[in-house]
Length: 124
Image (tube, rainbow, N blue to C red; front, side, top):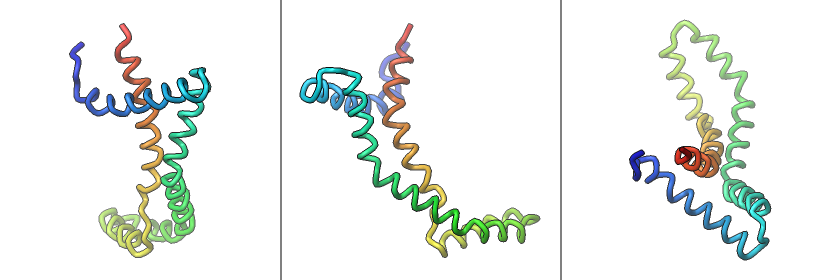
């Protein structure tokens, strides 16, 4: 296996930071890795809390406008290109960002999956 891959360059800093935080909890808070993992998870959740709040607000806004979106879809069901343009204009008019709900989950996965992926990738 070739060391120093592109994926390693992206994930290594994240893994190093998480390992540092875990070791900090083990050395300074409670000398138990199980407790450390729980504290690390809580830390990541607290750091991502503002994004989670944004995601929730975005989801609520999307639910509020769902009937109008369905009406647009019905109106332009035969013209997909026009439907795309109308939906984009609708989102801009109502200041809705449909992908905003994805970012917190993505960031959470990025912070928790790399250690597991790197560990598994290095197993013989």
